[in-house]
Image: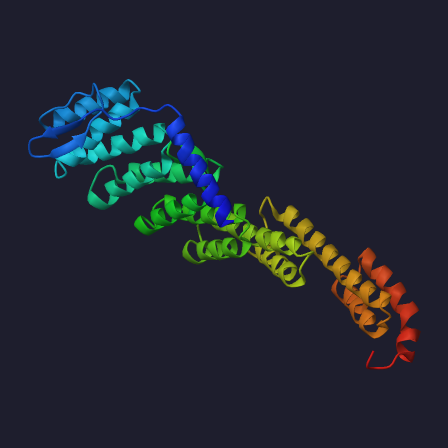
Length: 326
């Protein structure tokens, strides 16, 4: 796996140098600032307000690369000015337009941390939430103008940061729920369950709590299917779905949940029956009877229970003649 990762990284570096891309212009000296790279043709101003106007004008023309350069000059040259927080917001928007989503999320975070009283606090949260949602929906993480890195991990990171910064904002519960969805997409169902349980603990009365309780059952069900209907995870799924019906008996999903419970019990019965059949084939009739009886105990009205009863009737005499050590 490491060798594949290294190979991809080398390919990415090679493509970066092969593909055409804009290069910065000369290294320019500004009094009081020092040396900095500046793109050719980007006008600079001597005060933050005028520099901000230049950046906004470039952004309005959808010249996002140059606008980003102009916004960065405000941030670098006048970090304590009111224009700086406006520049950070503008820079984040330009980076988003250029699909540098993770960089944009980081710039929104800079706005939140360096300007905690900014009137753009909620705008920054909204920007981060939208970016994380794009990663969750399959958008790739862009590095060196290339987009082939999974964004699910970035989605989790950004959603967690939103919760840390504003746990009881309108973005808190939704972010926690989407962390669970991201883990599910990464096939980490156990982590997904923990994320949903955390939502139920923190936001029990939020509308997302109903969906979280459903997803707990769904995640356990997915995990059970991965291991040929692992009995423990199947039991956990059934328990979670039963909790759902107790908490939300009038939910629009109630009928679906009942059907999922029935299907899970059916699969459990099938799994137990197959184990019993395995022992039967190996002539361990006593062990086979244990599993066939368990099929009947767990789901007495199922078709598998009828077949298990037939097996019990046929194998009981053989089990009596079999030594106890067998």
